[in-house]
Image 1 (cartoon, rainbow, N blue to C red):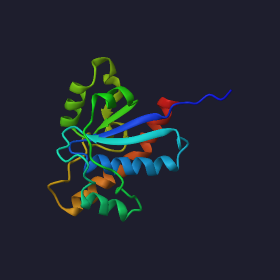
Image 2: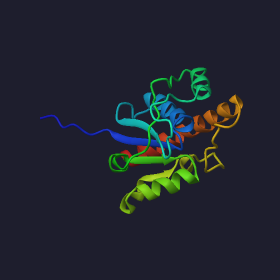
Image 3: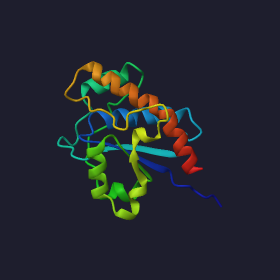
Image 4: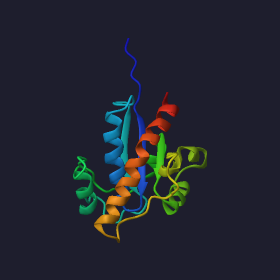
Length: 163
């Protein structure tokens, strides 16, 4: 008899799901491929507002990721749902507004699965991932680097929680 273990589900959340959370989704998938958790974690992203469902990530986000070998073109913007709250094992918010929206949407008994993405990064003084949307391409590169730098510690956190 073969027992199948369900994959751990991780959801990365920003506001519109076109900048930060798609970059985080692409980066986490990439880093997981080189980790002991390879194949055991399902990664997705969503937005708390998402006024453009079905859109691809911002071209600046795609460009900065592509320059580093990460393809975001398969990601489509979508709004976070109550079903996401139930299905996800870990939900990582990019900023305070996303955190407030997630805590309102999620049943109180499941609030423990929600945290800031950067709260697991030991070397980072920031708690919020800045939103690069209204800035320059350099802002996207900076945000990409902030998220990329957090991935090692995030994977260690997931390993400690998944087992």
